[in-house]
Image (tube, rainbow, N blue to C red):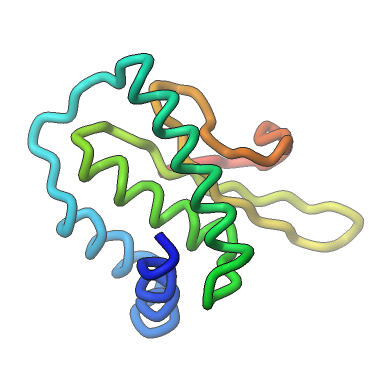
Length: 123
C-alpha cells in the first residue's frame, strides 16, 4: 500500500479526481462482484487501517481521498463492490470535505467520524 499511495497521489495531481477514479475502475474491472463474507469484511476493515497507517507514515502524507481511492481499488480487485463516498459540510464558516469507503452499507473508515455530518455523500 505504501508504494501504491504515491501513484494515486500523482494521478490525482495530474489527472484530477474523475479521471483517477475511472482509471482505478478500469484497473480493477469487476464484472460480477460478490457479497462480502464475514471474513472478507474483517479483512477489508484491516485493509482500511493499513491504508491509514500508510497514509501517515508513507512517502506521501495521504488525505482521506487518496486512502479511500486506494482502498476502493483494492477491494474491487478482490471481487467486492465497495462504494466510494464523498461528503461536504460547512462548519464554523469553513468548508470541510471527507471521503470514505463503504462495503455492504457499512463504513470501513477507522476514524470515529460521524459521516452523517457530511451532506450529499455520493459515489
